[in-house]
Length: 209
Image 1 (tube, rainbow, N blue to C red):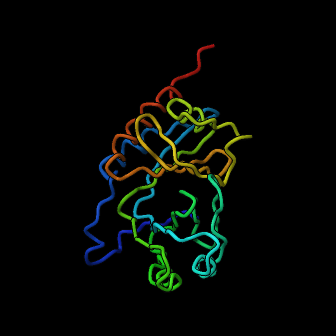
Image 2: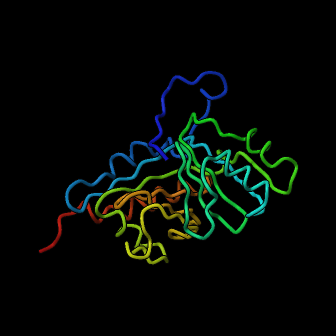
């Protein structure tokens, strides 16, 4: 998924929306640590997200895949990028389609692809927000509260899994060597952001030699 561009040119109801972490924007920015132990965290607000359910291997699934431009991920951890969208595996018959803000969600097209067969397409963009953690120390920050083995041999770039960070359920998506995206429910975003800021504080202090 390409990096989103958020502008202040929205009109109508869109101009009134407020991201779950707008009130912490300054604190997130000020928490940035530079240098060899650097790490930063930022919110990617208003990301487009669709909850998709369909029977794998069915005719409806084939039509859905043609609409998305990529095969649906078949196992835990798999993702399927196609243009600006990436489809993340959530379960044997459940996926999350993620795209930058402003991207056409394809809701109507995917509904048409189901053609009345069992399945569903629901816009859940307001259900979650996206936090991006990046930098040489990003994995170390996550290791403080994530029960997963995040070693690069186990959790590779492109993989996404449901887990917890501290007490917060998240969808954790490793998008590059030192870059992770965390998708918490919007109601948990404030707690998670503050947890990350606190966990990053260690790396702002000089190493003791």
